[in-house]
Image 1 (cartoon, rainbow, N blue to C red):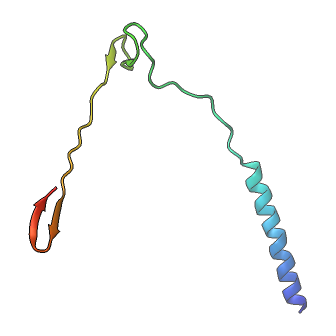
Image 2: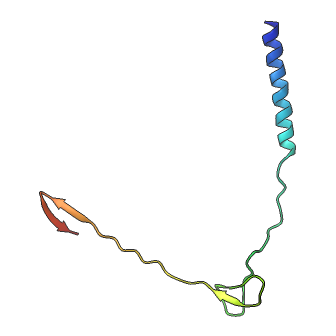
Image 3: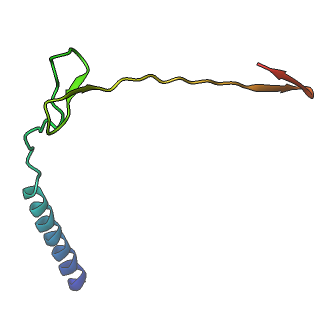
Length: 79
């Protein structure tokens, strides 16, 4: 019984030490870094190319197409 008690107390003391050490290692919030500079010469959506004074705009669109085939009583119907 004495061995179980000392094992439990030792485990509890070890856990307290570990939790206390982790609390001291909280990350410090770093200052934000602006990787891409916004180019205001030509309006919205233009950005400076890193390492140069050239502005560029990336645009585009997405197109989707869907179709389904319904089988009803052995007859094929498109829909």
